[in-house]
Length: 430
Image (cartoon, rainbow, N blue to C red; front, side, top):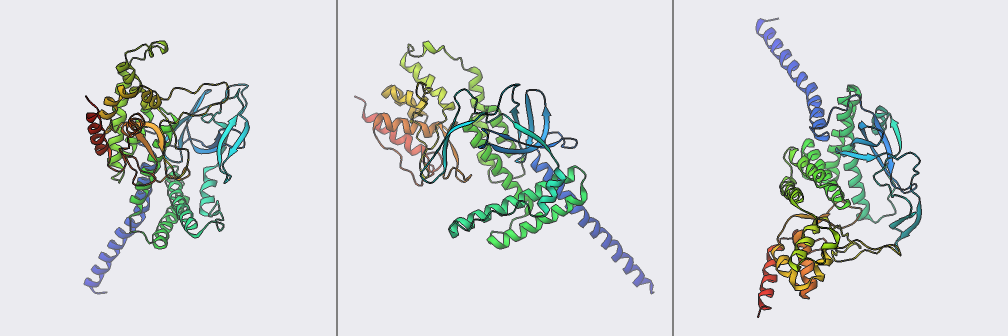
């Protein structure tokens, strides 16, 4: 063989070797990135941790949870959830039985509206029942075989079928990537590579089927993870978890690679930090002191507690009415509604309400498009609540919704509402 041909062959062989090495390294590096995406930097390795499954809530109406057992003692359990959050759950105390459902209330369409629990029992929605150790490798194999199978939704109209199939395709794609990342972390390289290939194939099929703009798989997963964390922060915010935990969720979105939700996350993290600082400085008066306070102090008291008001939207479509006083079982008294207490104070509250109409601090009041959908869910701001309270006191409309999911803070009308309210208030002065 001529010398120059021999040299060319050697160069080609070396180039092929480099290319092959790069191709082999690419899945490895991608799975490593996915692991960092799905497991927060502050969370220890999952190596040596058990994969578990358990339920919360009443028997027959429980919610299933899966994740890595990160910490465990006699009283509580901490897991890294499938959604990538650290969550703590209570363990049942000795002799305590799982709650029972006494009555199920449904709407005309058959959807569960409420569950009545036996009066002497804790609903137990954060208590872990029936904890079981599971085989994670077996779960990976199920994913590779397409388990669980797709649910038959042929009874739905075409638009709803399309939406459901699309959502299911996203779920399966993301699950494949998560299984791949965790299998890689555990050293199950062969199954991790198979799952990695499955995720990439599913992503390609998704783009082609739903004709969405081409998006890198890594970025697709980042945006999805950010949405998952936002959904959890909104829903758990309404459910009452601590502001410190909520702050951590929004900060987790900020710690992800660049994504579309980071501007909102930055604003929410700043707001929760402010609320936490205000809570530290707050001195709670005794219950019997509140009604005897000067009216301006009563306004300040209920404005402070507006942050923990957790009114929920009652219909879909609909809106979250912050003045609605919830019904309670006969013989019980509903807890005070801070928004309604401000309404009762009348015009004395109006100057403060106007001042806070552009206040972006979140409350725990929950509005949504559809209760089962994570699209267009919101925690109402102080400003959103103040607009509703003002309209009830003044009997004057200053805000009209643009959509069935709109609030002043979400459609850019907070400043306009504040200006209209201030002008009206000025007109009332002698």
